Amino acid sequence: MSDNNSFRAEVAAWLEANCPASMRRPIVAEEMVWGGSRLQFQNEDQRLWFERCRERGWFAPGWPREYGGGGLTPKQARIVEEEMARLSCRQPQYNLGVWMLGPVLLEVGTEEQKREHLIPMMRGERRWCQGFSEPNAGSDLASLKTSARRVQDADGEAYIVNGSKIWTSYGDQADWMYALVRTDASARKQQGISFVLIDMHAPGVSVKPIELISGKSSFCEVFFDNVRVPVRQLVGPEGEGWAVAKKLLQHERAAMSKFAEGGAPSHDALAVARPYLQEAAPAQAAVWRDRLAAQLMDAHAFALTHQRVTAQAMARQDVSGPAAIMKLVQTEQEVAKYELLVQVMGLNGLSWEGEDFTALEHDICRQWLLTKTYTIGGGTSEVQLNIIAKRVLGLPA
Image (cartoon, rainbow, N blue to C red; front, top):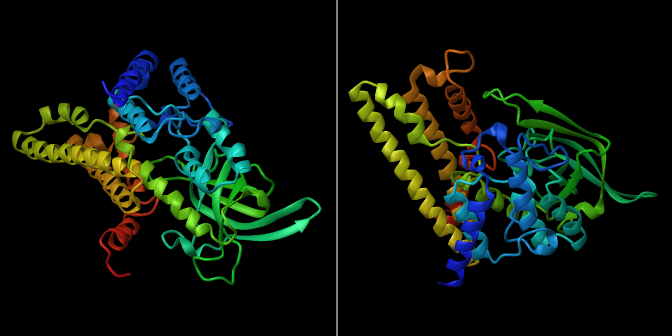
């Protein structure tokens, strides 16, 4: 048996022994365990699964041990992910810091920043949000206006931040924000931007939730009124935050492309559709079965392609182009899946509340609406198409 096969067997045995059965069901939004200062568990199984993975460093199996990770090789870390997906193990902790900021700090952060921020992520003590989009700088991100003026006073060297961010996921629950700010208003559009880390509890920070069409309020507006950010929270060189953000967005796309592996709440399309197909008219059911089969084949093809891209990444190949493709395809597939399920369920798929509908029907309707945001967050599908055109196909700008 090869070393990798031996390691895979060891991982599988550990997961079988330590992942509670209730943590092997598809995740729903209400049962996601978000790390942070407000960490809460709904039941003992959630706590056990969280703490057991934390002890092994499996919130980030491939991170160095000195920063709380598992210290595994890229291949071993991928085996952990594959075995967790195979057994339908839930993510033990959801944390944008682990998925996106952490890899960037490991690459370009100072040793002080790694010690200050990575270890709390791995303990599940600090929750992060992303401060990129602004009211007039969404897809055209480089148009951002939030300013950061550098000062030197009796309290040391710092930036004074003023402005606002919008579409900030869970900004009202976060402890810290990684944000893009303009430190040089006279520079060209994509220059003069810096990447900073902001304490959401600092004086001058205020947050206003935004209600979504799905009835949930995961998005917020965040306002900065003379917020003081120590210069030691600058990531990368001043004025070169655009390059840092591009590194982070690559990790964001990779994280979103893993939704099919249990990274986000989703449903087994076949299991949901089967009882409704049995009640449908034969001709209509035949059409839906064809579409359902096509959806399942697309999902399988995506999973296989995801494995190939992951292998390329582990071989240190540039996967920034494929990552955009994976994000685009995965999020569009989720939209198509839920649109099909709503059609199969008929009027029951448009339920919102009331005892005439099941809890699953309520959930499918809300999830259908929520999937619309997947094609916007992390760069819209149109943005991904532009990236694919330039970086993958080499088309002129």
